[in-house]
Image 1 (spheres, rainbow, N blue to C red):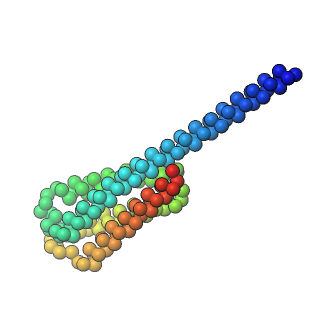
Image 2 (tube, rainbow, N blue to C red):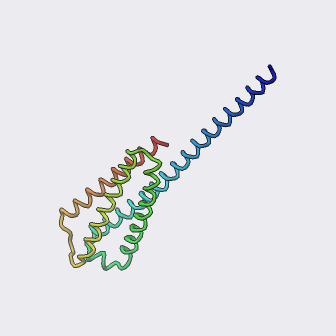
Length: 163
């Protein structure tokens, strides 16, 4: 009888150990997936922010006509911005699945600010005859950059808290 109880206790201990190990492994895997999703999203978000800052500065300092004379540099940056927005959109799906609501809201806000700024850049470039931009439009673009910076910071803070 003691041998049977000992065997049952050993089997139970082995089963509990396997269960705990499996749960721990699952938690580690989920944390790694979440870290990878956040890292990919933030890496692309930072690159997008940099391109938007450079494009905004180029246009606001030189005016649309001045930028048009620079050739394809601005178009190359806008193509890069387009690719980064597409990549961010794909990453946002994973972030939404892995992250808390607060992170998803901040990430979506960052993307909305980036899209609005990108649209402003396109609008400015369409009218290449203008040598100067209206002060209100420049201030609006600078406000979008400020809001983008705030959103990027919020995404970083929330991501760090949830890793």
